[in-house]
Image: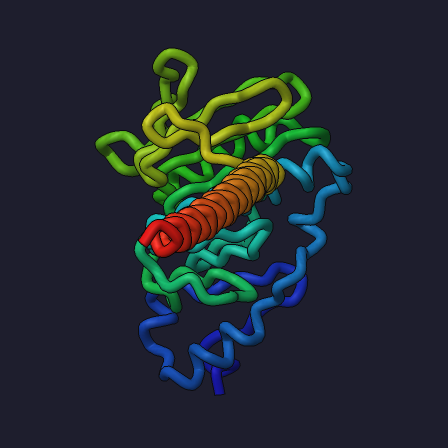
Length: 270
């Protein structure tokens, strides 16, 4: 049984240290992964931050998921998914991205079981402890080797970013380029537009769901309008062809009558 080597503490759930993980059988590993909670422990629970917080993280995941699906790139995205690094307290960033992995549904991300850590973390700060997002997480995520970390400070309307340096254990600030913050992990750029965090590809903004719907509605309206115009044009052409046929028949009838009258007159003179 896995309890002989490792037992999950319900008050402080953690994945086993890597050296313990390597001594476990496949069955023991599966049992431990299944026993790791997918809900927040008291140590990670934070007060609700309202609609601005929920909408920002949900919008980010939706926009990125739609884009990567369209281009056929495997990027796993999740919101507030429990993350378990070996021997570390559980944490759950607002949005995570892991590149080149299967994108099936998960209840948690256990680094030892997945074979890799997460590549990007995004936090949306609306309320609560600012120091957690802007200081503690910067040190923690860098120490864990998370390649990039971005913070959307929704209240102050600013964007901050960090990327691992050459030592792979400390962060360097991501400097904006003409207002755009490049993400090497995503292959995209981030920028604030009013109160929204937007993503860009080649300086073209990735559309959000409501924008895509509006664009498709305009396209449908345009197609329907062109179809109506074409139907009207075809109807007019059909009317003109019918009128031309009627005139041709009338001309042929008059010609036949004239030829018949001419023949009658000739017979009368003979």
